[in-house]
Length: 460
Image 1 (cartoon, rainbow, N blue to C red):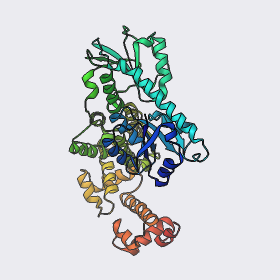
Image 2: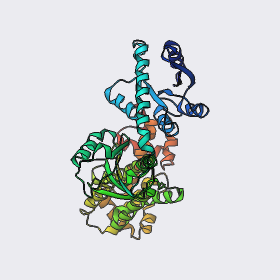
Image 3: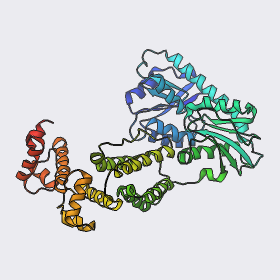
Image 4: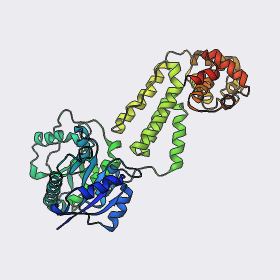
């Protein structure tokens, strides 16, 4: 029987080359369709669900190859994937295989490779996957006849060595454990305590109740959903058993109330939590309970990092960078706590009360956000419940500049950014940062930088 092939690549020349150059018929294969991105490919599969193999490029517009493989894997479990790539580095190839691909074809070596060898390799990969799926289907369809069962799940598929070591140390026989996918194992055991390898990071041991008469397949799907949606927030770097009911694995805990999320963002960006421990703890719990997607959470934290550094870097003399990624909520909490504790360390050096410090920083944030408006120190002092003279003294001592000098500094920093990155006229820039008089703005700018706005722009 001929294997049916779908080619997915945004480069039409690549698609045509693959179709015409490779001896498909000699290897019992036939091209039945092509698509220029993952979205088109999913639409094609809806009317052609019997496709055996997708040749897919990773870098495509609209929907890339990785997103396509993830979406198609859930809908078409029998579909195999071969990735088309210009990369051949070991780490990249490992990443491709972790996506679920059975092989890859290097575009840069396309003309040099033996086409028969490529297709033989693909056939072997499909045969291996088919054989494995057949052997797994028996246990996947079996019912679980106990009310409680264990599962090991890991966010990192490279931790498979640690998982096998766990089974060996706890004498869990191969016949008692089942690999649902590379990072999800289901097993039965009479143990109530377990030995854990060291290290054993990014992995959780779950004791799952309420599984009686569930099939291993349905439990595995629930665990996969748990891994995607809840693992990030539930994980703790503790070697312990985590108890959970089967129905909790699929709970949709992602926030759906946009108004609640917007209110929470305003709470955090106010920076009031820096001055009150109870407020910080409450905001931290609320943020966790929102269960944002990790990508959405990271974007939120990136904005918080920029706000914190813009507010505190000048007065503390240091900035706090956001890590490149967070593997779990525990790491997020550590970073948020560092923000809070750095601010507390700075405040202990000040002679002013917590309330006064809070009011001064609120004033600073107001200036940072409203630098283009008229800024009246008397009015801001009155809103802070302070006299003008006391407010001015506190502002200078805490921020390190007088109110007037700080307003000028902030405005000129924005002017530098606009001069170096836009083609706006100098008059327009002056007005946009709060100065109606272009000449006055130019004098201030030259006094601060040693260059006129025009001379400064020429440097960029």
